Length: 394
Image (cartoon, rainbow, N blue to C red; front, side, top):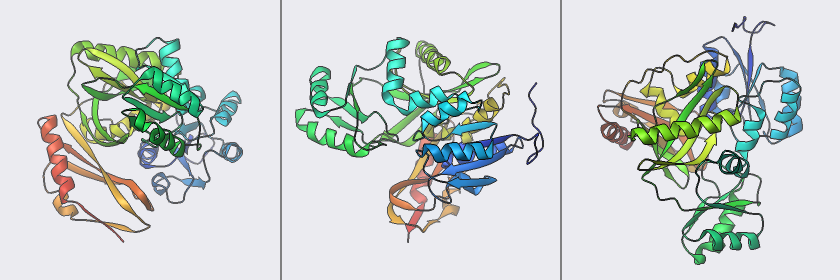
């Protein structure tokens, strides 16, 4: 029997968020709807989830000793990774000591490193993937290019949001792709994955919820990326029944292998009826922000529910919806959103402003959400609202 006690007492539940960005902020809000105490961790002050959390700690998530000391100090019921750049060896150690890492420490470790999750998917589970090679040196990289051929995609094995990623169209791009990969890796220079270019019609995120009553799939989310970073997403992505069946089978296989409770963002390439595994995140996915307007329980609500050991008997889908990321360039600790009255003048439009404390280069500062009769109309509505928005960087 699931039960939750009074907040700030011995019977209450406490969750620690490892990473406190916009996705973590929504998870914090949803956990607090159940009376859960939330502690937000991140490397910088005033991160979005810190705005709503009960307390916070500021330090780099890759500082394993500090992470361990904070967890021991807080004694949480749930350790919830919201980012990939975490000292996963300490999470494994803490889990062995009885702490509950969401969904599991193994899942967090495997998905932090593209090599771990790709070998699990392709070599252990036998799931269809693009051809690939790993390379730790420039010599191995040149050999991988030769074996995979052109065009190919080059990524650091440890990176996120498109950092360090490039497309090598010919041998002439080799130097550039290697340099980008070495500068963009989460831990600096290191091993890369070289992937054969996949001929696909579209790519999706299949949000997959593992909960106490089984596995539940959200309507497929289509999305558009720029340099590996999400710009628009929509729901539902039209798919053939055969493709949906294959996508769900792949998603269930990989999430069952990772284990635990929570939501997983399973990224897939689709060509006709064929589906190819790409990546998986054991947490809410940025493309899934569209669910804040498209259904009765957002991906964040589903994550909180699953984490707390509660069932998901049904997800009510409202209809075609879209999201558009508000990405702003500049270098400042002060910026201002203008024309919000114009942005929200059409029915079926919402906006979320994340409240990030600064912009360095370019940064996602918010998202526009829209619903309409069709996906195409919802995307067009989100685009119209975005065009009316003005963000002044001071």
